[in-house]
Length: 456
View 1: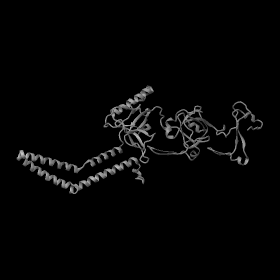
View 2: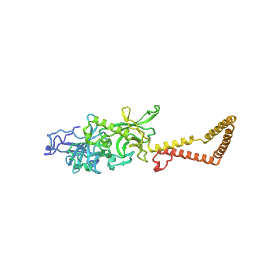
View 3: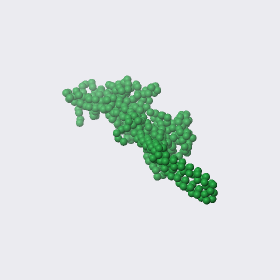
C-alpha cells in the first residue's frame, strides 16, 4: 500500500534515511497493551524523526512500532543463545527483579548455528553491565528435580507470561570494564548455569555397575567428596567381562580437567604449559595411578531421599581389591563398588543362604551312619582282638546313648530342638523381611521420610 503524506513546513530536516514511520492501532504484545486511544480517535501514522543520515522522501513503514525510540537514553547489546525459548520482541530485561530494558529484535544467524538477540537497557542501569556480566533466560517457571534436590525459580509474574532475560555481575567481577554498545554476551538457560565456571574440555571415562542404577539419569553430577567433578554423559548396556553372557549397566561420565587440577596433582602453572593433548594424557595417567595405587573407585549414592535421584561418587578405598587400569572400548575404565544399601542387602542375602543351608537333621543322620560303621568295625575287631573290641563296644554304647539323648532333645519335638528350630525360623523370617525392606528402600528411598505409600 502506498501512502502519500504532507508534512508541515520546517519538518523536512527531520526526514532522513533513519526516520521511521508506523501505524498506531490497538496492540497487545509482550510489553503490554498500546494504542488504546485509537479506539476513539482511529488509527494514525506516527513518526520518529532523525537528523542523522542523508535526506529522503521515500520510506518503508514499519510493520510494528519500534520498541526503543531515539528519545530513550540507554545502550543496546546483543546475546548469543542456543534457542529463543519464550522470548519475543518487547520481553523485559531484569536486573535484581527490576524491569530495566526490553528485547528489541531476534534472528537466526546465517549458518543457523544459534540465535542472536538484540536488547536495550535504559540509563542509568546500563552502567552495571560489565564485560563479565552474566545473562540468563528468566522466562517461565524453572522446576528441576535432580540429585541435589528440588529447585524452583521464577523471576516475576510478568516473565511467566511474556518471557524475559535477567543479568547480574558477581562481586569479584564488578571491577571489570564497562561493556561497550553492541557487545555480544552468552545467554544461559538459567541462573545456576550462568554461575558455573565454563567447561570447554572433558575426558570421558567408563564405569560399570553390577546392580540396579534406577534413579541415575543423564546429566547427574559426578562428585568427589562433595565437589562436582563431572557429569553423567550416557547410560547403556554392556557385557560383564567375567560373565560374557550377562549384561550390566555401562555409564559414561565426563570428567572436567578444569575442576581436576588438585585432584590429579597438576598445578595450574604446569597445566598452562601443556598442550591440550598432553594435558588430557597426563590427566588420564594420574587418574589411572589413583585407581591402581590409592584405591580410587566409583559408586552410586543417593543424592536426595525425596526424589530418589542418584549420582556417581568418586572416593578412595585403600582396602579395595587391587585392579590394574583397563580400557572399555576406547575409554579408560574406573572400577566400581556397590553402594552402601546394596552392600547391606548382599550381606543379608549371604546370611539367609547360610541359614537355609544349615540342616541339623542331615548332620544327625550322618552321625548315625558313622555309628553303624563303627559297630561294623567293632564286630570285625571282636573276632581278632576281643579285649580291644569290648572296650570299644563300651565306649560306643556310651556315645550312642549320648547321641540318642542329643537327638531326642534336638529333634523338632524335643525341648531344645523345638526352641532351636523356632529361633532359626524367626531369624530366617527376620532376614527375609530386612531383605524385602532393603529392596523396597532401594526403589523408594523417599520412604525413609514419607513412610511407605499405598502402592507396593
